[in-house]
Image (cartoon, rainbow, N blue to C red; front, side, top):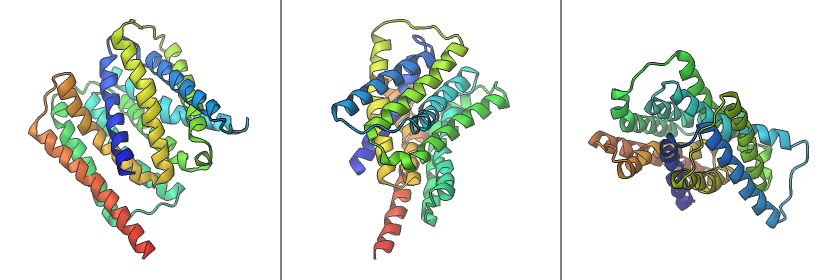
Length: 293
C-alpha cells in the first residue's frame, strides 16, 4: 500500500509539468479531451480483454457524471482560471484545500470520523504547500476577478466530490470498467468546453504527442487508476492527504526540467508537507490499532 501511494503521488505531481509543457502547442481542453478519450479506450480494451462485467444502462449516466466531475470539471476549471489570470501558484494553493474539503465531506457522506491528530496533520500539510508555493506567490500578478477564483474553487470542489463518490456504489464495479466510463465522462465535458471556447491550437510534434501519451497512459491511466484503487482500499480522507506532496514534487521536477528556482524555504515546505501526510496516516494507524485491540 505504501509503495503504491508513493507511486501515485509521483505520477500525480507530473500533471503540473505536463500542463506547463503543452501551453504553446495545444489548447488545454482540446488536449484534455484527447487525453481522456485515449484513457477511456485503454481501460475499455482492458475491461473487454478481462471480460469484466459492465454496469446497467441506468448506472452509466451516473458514472459519466462522476467522471465529468473527477476529470473534466476539475482540470478544465483549473486551466480556465489560470488562463484568465489566476496564478498557477494560487491555483495550486486552492488545490491544497482539497484534503480538508474531502475530510469534511467524508464525515457527512461516509461517516468517516478522523482522530484529532489527523487534523494536526492536515494543518501541517497546508503549511507545507504554502511554503513550497511562497516564492511564486510573492511574484504572482493578482489581476483577476473574484469569479475567476470562484471557478478555481469549484474545480477543487469537483475533485473533492468526485473522489468521495468513489466510495459509493461505484466501488462495487470493476475498476477498469469504472475508469473507462469516467474518462469518457471527462472527455464529454472537456469536449463541450473546447467547442464552446472555440479552441483549435494543435501543433503536431514530439512534444505534443509525447505529453499526450504520458497524460493518457500514465496520468489518466496509472495515476487516476491508482487514485480510485487507493480510495476503494482505504479511507478517502486519508488518501486525499497524499495530494499535499504533489506541489512539492512538482517544484523539484520543474527545477530539473525547466531550470526553475528551488529555494531553501521550498525544501522546508516539502518537509512540512511530508510531515503532515505522515501524521495523518499515523493517526489513522493508531485509531485502527486501538479499535483492533
